[in-house]
Image (cartoon, rainbow, N blue to C red; front, top):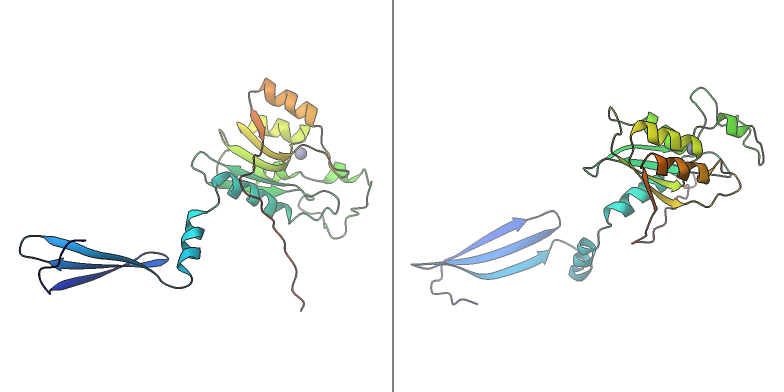
Length: 212
Ligand SMILES: [Zn+2]
């Protein structure tokens, strides 16, 4: 640490989003010495705060978690799927979940188990994410999905110009309308890359309604 040769000191406070950095400087006849830099957390435990800032989730976790968040909107009691479309700038340009078309009252709809008729009516998560995107097109984008796209959604992905699919699982559950083999065949023919999500973080999204 440099030696302070004069008593005159300048104290600077630099305030960032979560911390206060105190810089105490001393001015000598020839040089400005920064004699002390103290990082003082604005509140809370310093070590914990530092750890939190270092361990922000990565992009792929953020996008897959967004797809999982979207699926929480689905009213299908047997199969909930979410999708999240992302462009090259890591901006989310659309999300979707499986549900009924506009005009259908999905509280009135019979979501009965093994009700085959539901497949004729439900709009899939990928379909909704593409249709309700907030940009003019999705060319070159990546789509994150909680379940591998169905053959119908695969066609839409290809035709809309999406170039990459990151899926959480391709294991069909009982209520899913999925023909993954056909989807993979079409993706390969159209040069749409698909790969399974490689988790760097475990995450849980749980919502518990508060009692009135
Ligand atoms: Zn689908």
